[in-house]
Length: 116
Length: 114
Image (cartoon, rainbow over the protein chains, first blue to last red):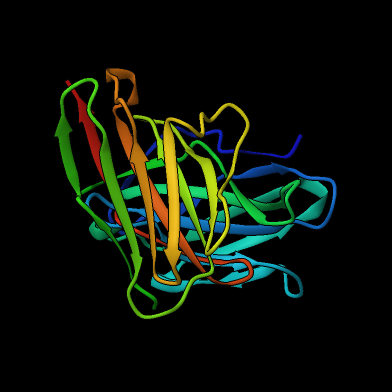
């Protein structure tokens, strides 16, 4: 079955330090992969997505992610985090449902805490 | 970016009553909207896919008679939790699809059933 795994439930990073959030997927075909951020009171916001082509994807707010087929991974990175990056981050993969619609399957999320 | 709103943002109701949650795409038309449920410290789980002008398709394990979905226009989908029980308390999130593989999410509705 298709699935997305985020091994880290909670990560704490110092402001200005680098960040890497891990995501592994299980999907038979070429996946469509996404990273979303969820802040309190706000809807999920798309950070970046990978469909095909260059495996290093640039997103908003200085985030990037690298698709590695050999490792079934799509890790999110940022070279220097800001206090405003504290939020919940979700990795997701699109699968095609039995009804022909695309269906987003989410990982369990990683909560990012930033310390001064 | 596209904007999706949800109303209400929070609702508290008594057990046995019904609650309606609205999801609107404010600046684009969406033939397809999705309803998710998010438990504390858990991922988003797709409940159903709402298609304008037709019946919603529900994920396995989701009671369609309990979670009524209506997608009467290209900008509005509603989720009605009927005969709500405390175990229905959760965070409900909708999304609207602008094009294939492009969904925009609402801010969510916190439902508390007493």
